[in-house]
Length: 401
Ligand SMILES: [Zn+2]
Image 1 (cartoon, helix red, strand yellow):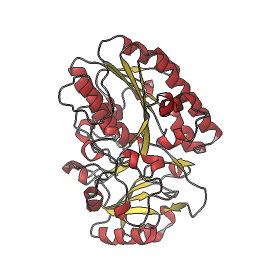
Image 2 (cartoon, rainbow, N blue to C red):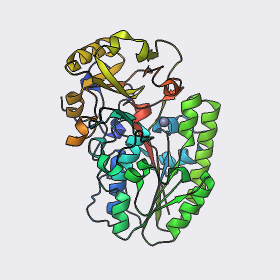
Image 3 (cartoon, rainbow, N blue to C red):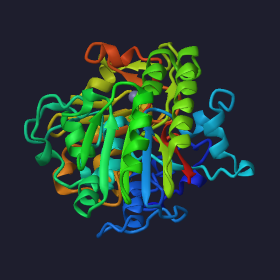
């Protein structure tokens, strides 16, 4: 079942959804989100890191601006709303933009942990939106950290920020004050100093200030609302386009304030796809007796499901899910998904039991909703999580001074 790693630039536009073997695998090790900070840390001279993304040149002051939910394909499809980002894409205007792969699943908690730890999901262990805690048997929401679980037991590795800070690099995160003390921030983004700033404009200005204040700096900043508008109203809605225009202005505002010897990298945690509001496109697990048979817990999210079977039923559940969903989802058993490298080249022992007995990733514009257990998520217009290009590819756009 092992298959070659797909490079981000060679991602298939239209994956042929015939079998598990055709599922593309994120470019772990050379072109995924988990490779970004280690490459930047290597350029800053932090011990223990190597240069993994070939094209990135070192800089003394490095900034990562992560725009939640802004996929590579969505930027490319909206030059009018994103003129500044588009100029960074366009090689005829000196742009060097390229895509990275987010990692699987393409969801915020997983991707932020990949960015911050520099590790693929199989190592940091945040392998889904909700996953089963093998210690309690309960589902745990990784984004909201419910129920509470000791953060550093769940994710024991130090972040790249922590190691950079220890190596004498001025290290900071500039984000919403709401995220300052969350367990997800602790396990994914801690190290150096967290600065809470409410508005996007304040974050940009303060980020530029932090970069200018040190000879060697690593500063992370974040904007969430492109994702929010996409979930509520859909990609390409007026609200989403308005958020894209705002994000474009924020990037330009930061770029224009960059001090000398800086590199700004704009990226995202995942893209998004719109799911039509009809019964064919939204398969309701809570109403489907066939899919529910033998299932103890349903984790993940609409486009990337972890399915936990009752003892002894895993093979039957896998066969049934393949039969019912196989032409619209990639459906793998746990060991198949691990061997195929969906979660990275290696899955830590403590992480195995968090992965579903069956893993189902949508390749069509379809979602497996759960109208009773997840009424809020099931009603969303835009979703993400799977391995299609629209979700998996995120931009890596660079501004240098
Ligand atoms: Zn989202």
